[in-house]
Amino acid sequence: MFMKSLLKIVLLSFLITSVQAREVLGNLSNELNSYVQVDNSKMDLKMLKSLAEERNQVLDIAFENYIIAKRRVSVARAGLNPLTTGHVLGLALGLNYLWVPMAVNAVLSIPTHLYNISKNVSLRRAEYNNYTRALKVLNNEIAHLYFDIVTHEVILKTIDLEIDVYKAQLSSFETREEISQARKDEVTKTIIGLNIEKINIYNLFVEELAALRTMVSRDINDSKIELQQVANEINDRFIQNTDLERLENFARQNSDEVEMLENLYDASIKNVKAVKWSLITFEGLNFSYKRRVKIAKNEMEITRLERLATILKVKKTAISKLDSLQSSLDVFENYKSLSLGSQDFHDGLYINYTNGIASEDSIVLTAVSAIRDFRNKVVAHYNALSAFDDLKLAAGYNFVFDPSGDNTIQTQMESK
Image 1: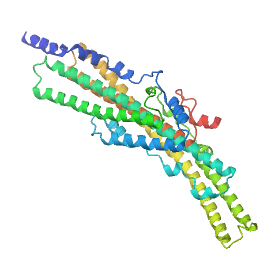
Image 2: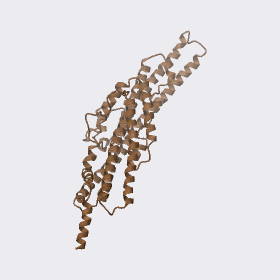
Image 3: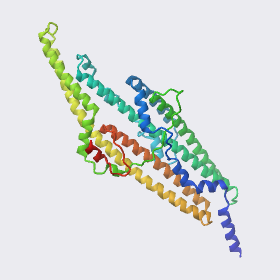
Image 4: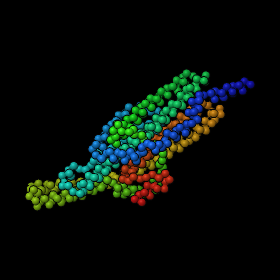
């Protein structure tokens, strides 16, 4: 009789909890998945890049805006405290997949000494290639910033949800006499720590939005910029069976950098001829003639070598970015699997919890795990999309991801 009464008391303690706890724990998966739903009223990456191209026609101003924006975000990131809400979260906020500095020399690399060449078609083409390349690199930086912002938006929401779980647990402690004050204090400290992290990440989030407005030259009086989440999850079927040699040649053919150097090389050849033929003019006939011919030939040789080095760099960069994308996809698939598993486990345990055969502590533990695994999955998802944008820049082609996996990178290169 005594054992039956004790069993009833233990069972009753499992069932006693606040309505808030049941709402938070019972609707966890739906709540998490709602964070990445697409809102078509918001701006997607394609729209954002179009806006940037429209407003960043003057390269000097666009580059200056980039420097200002990067400085703002760098300062905000420097103020972040060490994070405890998940391994990948820590990577996403601390390492360099976010805002890799733009290689200025690679973008603005027309040798100034060639400007003294008389204006010709080759030099004008080289200048246009340089301009086009610079805008593409700036657009790639905008894509990185876009993915940072939507990632941090989800991170903030998941931290709020995690806080709600702990608050619900703390509320239920009031009905459980066996809970010590030390245990209550431990949960309270966890909530305080999460709130501190939330404030730090929110400050970074605000600075990123401000930086984005600067990057696209959008005035503060313009309408508010709101960004879409990206629902399509890229997978490794998209890059399977990619012919590496074809990708190298594809990148070389599409490269603005290579075309710029080819036009500069052509301009340097014309410059050598122009200097040689200056012998027949009154101005060209002087003691500096041999030195001027030697300088012109040296410039031609330097440009030829730069062209060859650029071809090699472009090819290797394309392969490197493909490898980075593959690595990012492997990480994403891993965290995607973990997230699905932890959500399923939580949902199953919640049924046992409502039937009184699982403890509140265990359901809280699975809820926190599900939230953190989901957060890591989202970070890995946007990391992969960021790597994909890097590959598009390296290949010089706007590959389109097909969720079905039929229109792969290989098929798109073949059709091009």
